[in-house]
Length: 254
Image (cartoon, rainbow, N blue to C red):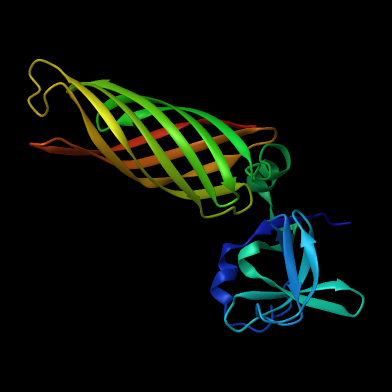
């Protein structure tokens, strides 16, 4: 008997104009506490039932504008749910996951553990330009699509010591299997203590903004590996300075 595993397929969004799934087995996982099921693809249609968070239904059809999925509720009964409230994925044969990739999926990688109400703690190390960088992040996830993080990071190198403290918003773009790409924007402050010969800034605290993204790699258990890349800009009344930070580390989900 062949085993089956679900793969989240982000490319489903590209088929918004399709009326069916051309033989593919597409399933929908409910992502909020209570989702209304309507008799037609629109908010004006009669509500015929509700489905709850975590429940999975097979997708029978999709509206021409891509905003609604039709699901099977009971024998002979089907209805429509808003696409923004469910997560689509396909069922594929595990035999397609051959070699090292299949072994990793079976023994090391796991499903994404990020969910509504999760708290996260992450530690990372890397580089800020040519200087070493260490960061500590405390996060809270108000929904499956967003993660709010408070970040404290310190860099020390040729131009001096830089302490940054930022609030960041991470927008989840996945998951795809056990990989979750994300985009990030943030803002906060930076305290710069230059070396004697660094004339870029005086010792002071200045506003800092950041933008970029990264990748989360979910392992079995509560551990997640993460890669973060940010473009950071710091401003003072007389000057501005920018560089790229690259960090790798681990994150725990509670």
